[in-house]
Length: 423
Image (cartoon, rainbow, N blue to C red; front, top):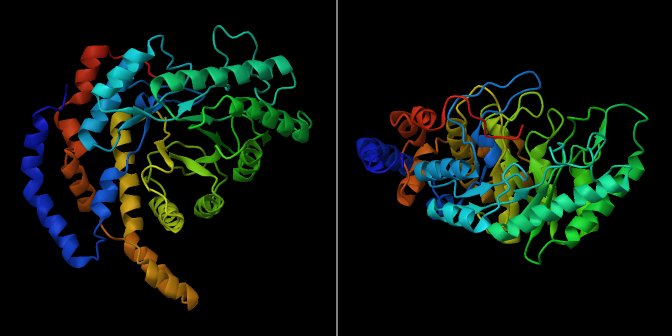
């Protein structure tokens, strides 16, 4: 609708400069023969709630032209995918994205070249037609009726996902406590596991359950699934279809996320990612905007661990962005995040693993650092652009988005006061 023939003109103007940069990196850096193929295969799912501006507890400032319904959310992700050819899936949040016509929604997504990634349940809010409140928790709640309501919601989310062709359920719980003494930690854990077992039993044989964790917020004393260890212990109790999901913002400051990722992957319990970035906590900032080296180090462990297990980089883990904030155009932010993730992945593919292992075995700490930082400091933008070009995307998706005035077109179509998320 927006891109069309302009994509060809955009690429034609930039092709010569791109080819010079691409030739230069090939002449200067040892490029793995399959790196472009791996970059082309690597798809990053877009969450429906990231398509509009989010907010804080104090305010929300709409940018205008936000998608007003599920159909428009699919159109927006289709637009991103047309630009970068790397956003080929959408992740829905239920009940925000519930539909009464899943066949039509599935067909619409297919028209945009999109599949449905994990479906996400919501027991951190009370909905308008909800009988019982989640104010004091959902799967951990002391009241069995509240727990039953939350379990049934998750089962309904699975059923909606089946109709759309999804293959996984993401469970994130805000359950916890705000003050000492409010909660019996042990009983809350046990109730949560029991509730999760009921949800797990409803999974189809080819589905996965991803259990997310978070150190704090909205509860500030304890969170019942507060860190990777708690999630890991719970998914081990559920079964082989249950995995831990890592959100990069869901840790205490300076947590060694790359080590967490490595150990979960080693244990066969890493399910996937919610990519974002943070300075202080769960800031939901653009991926790679604050800690690009950490993002690279995470991918360094991922590539190493997946290769050790013979895993398919593109298919065997779930890759998704999770972001929501006030001050950027949401679509521009997502374009930036996708490219930052691709760059970190490309840099990790450049690491000389034989040399790194030799340096480790020799206890040559300086060499280890140099090997990693050489890969990280390599400008891989031309590699990412080449993969995008071969897929039929734009050499510079963000520039084309702005050249076409897409946000102004969306505002004209949808209005300046629209709202996409359920937040």
